[in-house]
Length: 567
Image (cartoon, rainbow, N blue to C red; front, side):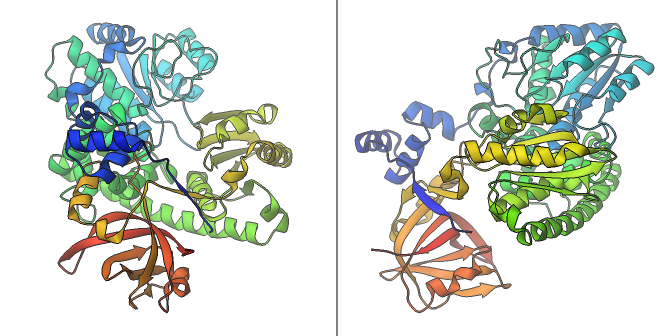
């Protein structure tokens, strides 16, 4: 794939010099911080030294007083509580922390995860019926519910109240629940708007601890699960999420909960964890429970108090993840072949595909793989009876959630975010939906969004790369949306003759300039070997990391892309 490179705007030199001198940091680091809005020594100190005291008061959130009052009433009257959440990582971690916390105060509790295949996303009529038939009078809904107005009304008719804890965009009208916690509400003055669904569940238990004078550890023991949700849901990694993720990663390394400990035993055990370790290791295993089976398996593991029992649940998740990988690989191969053998699909600005027997649990992953390969707004559908369920993934600067909404009369249900969404349509409407979605993409996709972009922070010299710089960059972690791992560009490089391809696809080489060399690895960039051979000059975009191999640790450049150098 051909990437376009673009440089971030460089800040004012005097401003960089001022921050560099005042906070005693290097010029490159000061430049990167100012690019990210961290432009004073005070803000830099806040950024580099997260503290739990910096978290906002949970009672600043609209309806928090109502939520706590309703829970306290339920506990005092010994009402039956049902903790309800979505089947993905954010939903299952949210259910796990809220259920684990409140079971310390009530024996009349259960949790409920809707079946992905029978009930679909979010609050379901079946879930409400289950609550009513079994005497539950309060449902705490996590990571879902903000648009479930009619279902909340239905529950009220059945004598069931709702407390909704959601982070998705609200509709025009807020559901008529006992309390609705969502910082994205237009009437909510909570200072931070980008919490995960699990993060809002955490604010709920934090508020209960605060209101009842309980020690902080009663809710802080769940920070590892909050970090898992933040990483897996790809929410913004600034402000409050940065603090929660920072301390959650520390807990993950030092004292993880029993369930996570069992899941990480063996191949996932590390002395320190990064957001990437969750995104590519822990998260997919938790997600696999709901993708190819029952997501309750993930909750059972995460709330378990006995390590040996948790181990058994973890084994199930590992097996399901292995099964998920096979399904993902097979369907992706089939989907790619559909595009590559159909000229009409190739010429479209969007990719919309449907497989009669494609597994509903992995179509979101397949959609992501197709975006990586073809870089177009993508929707992948699977079929259940006369309905199609779709997972949508987007490219930079294209709001796929809004585009789906513009096909309104053809869509039965949809929800999600700017870059990822889910929807359902009638099978008979598929051709018309695909045509209309393509029309919307053609009209509204910015021209520059047709080509994937690598945005680099700074141009560096090879001789500037050292352990002082690496250590400074590592202090900027945890990385994620809004605080991505810095990317650099260096021109006029050459390889010293060591360039080679590993496993038929990865490029390994030393990048040199005037006698200074740094090792580099480009995963999936093996096709660039001719470009860096025979002393040819090239430019590279990369991030800087530490690599340990055969007991030797050194600085390594993780290559993002390579282009011929033009002086």
